[in-house]
Length: 342
Ligand code: NAI
Image (cartoon, rainbow, N blue to C red; front, side, top):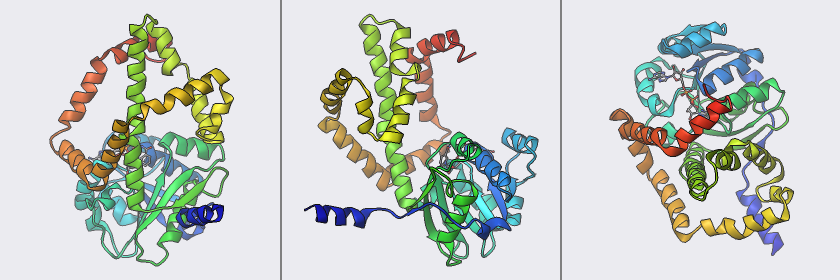
């Protein structure tokens, strides 16, 4: 029986890469299109690693920041013309229009286009030409982490994929770029062989299920504690403001999702094990499957594209409701008292 289970897992296990040959792209001009969360972190890592990075940006505060850090900033079309490797480091929802206007007309055969997420290629919002390599190097890490890990000599996980293998070496190029930004070749670093499709589905799935639910569950927990006579300060510190969550998350990463529970008191362990599963109701299980259905059939992607076209009406209304709501207001008072907000 065990043999069958092991064979099954061997068949579905992804290929992991811990190193790559960054020399493949060392002599090339790397055009970082965008200097935000990912763009700035990756550009700084590349420059520190001795790679030739230029920035392509619209004239805004991000361009100024890049200049103040000593980078040469070009318009996006000019940076695409000059680059051998073109990195798409602007928000997913603005990429299609920038692609059509500024990027596609300036690509020439043999260039390497790097996407940091699978989104636009998977949904067909961007259709790259056949005569360039189209690769994905998607960090499982916010930009700050990409930079901090690099500075501390550590790597970080990335999902890699290939949508166009014009050179025949696109996978090597994905590994080379992963190595060049400091993701692999260092402790903690790994590149997981994946695809534009898998990256998009898994990323959106997290955002549409546990990650969003987690925030709103904590907010509801706050309401319940306060309703029951707990002070706002005590409730908020218990639920998220103390930083205990950081220690738990760290233990999850280092020891494992359930293995970290052994570090809690036995009372806490018993409470987790009896009450935890009760929240995963049949309705929640159905909802998670509905979420993935709407991701796979493009319902969410179309909704988000329409939202951008209309000027973000739902997005802005939801933010407005949150910021006028009790949790935000009470948190504001506590965080000011604690010196975390001005
Ligand atoms: P961001 O929101 O930080 O991007 C800001 C940059 O986009 C700035 O340089 C700005 O000038 C440029 N920009 C904004 N609107 C523009 C427009 N209309 N036309 C031209 N340029 C415009 O983007 P972020 O979060 O770094 O995301 C970039 C890519 O990285 C996306 O594909 C995202 O999915 C991926 N990614 C992001 C992660 C993160 O930590 N935020 C994690 C992993 C992947």
